[in-house]
Every structure is written in C-alpha cells, then in structure tokens.
Image 1 (cartoon, rainbow, N blue to C red):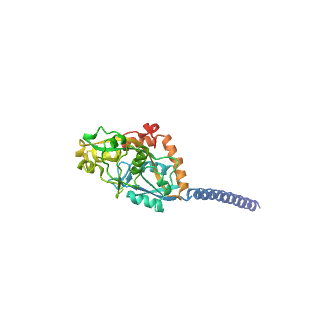
Image 2: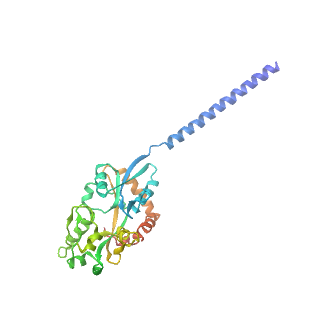
Image 3: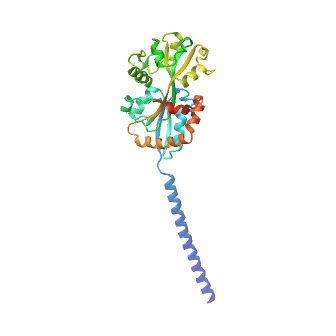
Length: 291
C-alpha cells in the first residue's frame, strides 16, 4: 500500500516537473524566436558611386579598395545607418552623373558642387559632405594672379571647362556678377582637361583645379607632374561646399544621410578626414565659405 502511494506521488511529481519544463522551454523558445526576428530585420543595400580617379577626394587604391575623403565620410555614414548597407562602385564622373540620375546608383560622390541646373536632375540633402579648395593653376611668372578678378583684368586665357562641370558654373557666376571684368570662358567637349599640362605647354595661361588633385599630381614626390613643382603654382580663390548627389526617388535615404552626417560633424570626424586627405582642416574656414 505504501509502495503504491509512493509510486503515485513520484509519478505526479515527475509530471509536474515535465509540465514546468515544457512551459519554460516554450517561453525560452518564444524569446529566441522574437530576438531572431528582430535581428533579421531587412537591410537595404544601396549603390554609392564614386569617381575612382579623383585622388585624394575619391579613388580606388592600390589594393582595389574605395577610399578618399568623400568615400571615407560615406563609410562612416553607413556605420550609423544599420538599416542600410552601402556598396561603393568606382566609375567615371560622367557615368556617375548619368547613373545616379537614372537610378543605376542610389547616390554618388565626386566632390560635387551645388548648381541650380543639377537640382533638376538630382536630390540634394540638407547637409553638405565636405569642403573643397578651388584655385587657379598658373605658370610661375603669373603667381601674382590671386583672384578671378586679377585673372580677368590681365586678359589671360583659361583652359576650357565642360558646361556640365560645376567649375564652369563658378566662372559663369563670377562673370554675371562682374560684367565689366569677365574671365574668357570656353565650354569644353570633355568633362575635364589636363590643366597642369595645358598650362605648362602654354596652350592656356591658367586653369581651374581642385587643390587635392593638384597636390597629388604636382607636389607629391610620386606625382606625374612633380618635375613641374617649380614651374607651376596653385592659387586658391575659393573654398566651396561639396555634396553627395542622390537619385530623385531617394528622399528617405537622403534624410537618413542628413541625420548621420550631422552627428559626424558634431564629433569632428569630418575635420579629421579633411586633415588626413587634404592636409588641412578646411572646416576652419567654413565661416568664410560663400557657396
């Protein structure tokens, strides 16, 4: 009799243990399932085009990796946006513009300036990406020419600039503001010309160029025109804001970028990258930037 009571008690106890274990297993399984579902939230992959031959702004390094100021800032933006995964695609400046406009790429970086014409084709975010030193490349004998006004007054000739190049817009804006002292502006059939070579050969008196590429081509010891370091000079005439270009349908992505880049600026990450890639903190002159 006692044995029967013992066996019944043991069976009941075992059943209770199994029941509790089952409940615990169910709860644990549910928590795991929910956590898994949360971790598997969809991440959108987007293509970010970059001009791969514009060192130190954006380029493909010797290891085949995308880098440069514009690219590295966008990589930091990507880290702050877990809902997105950026794929950097190296290409030409022309393909970047056409590709972003048509939606082949969701966004592109190429040291792009703001122009009214481009707002018809691209979506500009609220926050700019960086700053770019823009200047005149001149023969050493003309190093006294410091501004566009000086250049125009001297009657010097300028290397042609493609009409869809924002540098063309910069000169055009100057000419409109100074009708009595205009720079002789010629629209070229190529997006860019080899400014250093044209100036050195005497084909033109000067050309508009970005400081970064000038340093890379002329001042760097391994630059293709380093042998001309004592023959040509670069005189900055403006520091201009640069922007990423977004496809017109990418407002949500542009808004996410705005939030991230604002944080990076507050943390001075953009300042650090400016020093690393341009050799100077261009943000220090931000209060004097007019464009």
